[in-house]
Length: 142
Image 1 (cartoon, rainbow, N blue to C red):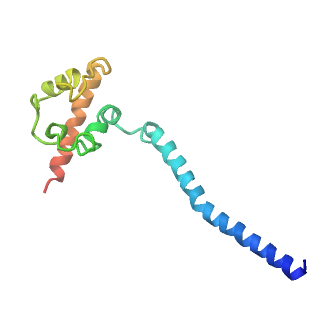
Image 2 (cartoon, one colour):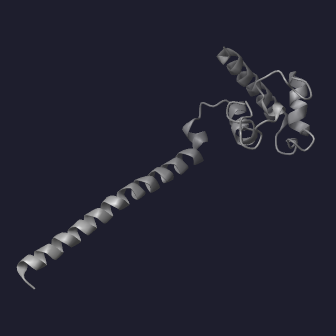
Image 3 (tube, rainbow, N blue to C red):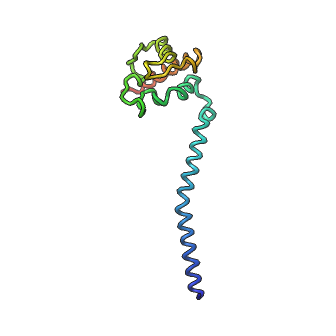
């Protein structure tokens, strides 16, 4: 094989390698971002230690169904009027005692009871945080 032919093969291989590396770079970047997101989300309690106990309890136990903002706009509860914890529509009453009882006892299989999982003190912290969510929603309303 001539020098020109050998040089052409080498350049062609280099281009393929560079093209492969260029194609792999976005995938590697995506993989790094996924790992970083997992590390950040896995350690949210450690990254945001300023969270009130009620807020952390809410994130851990309630946000999957009621959403982080308490409005119930989640795929699981969309259209369920009682899933919105920021409005005045409460199935069993919106006073603190009624809300605590609903958390403790659950709601006709729509919401599980948490009496076996949370202490009375934790339930009261959750009730207090729900008041914060309701105030935020009222303040943000037009």
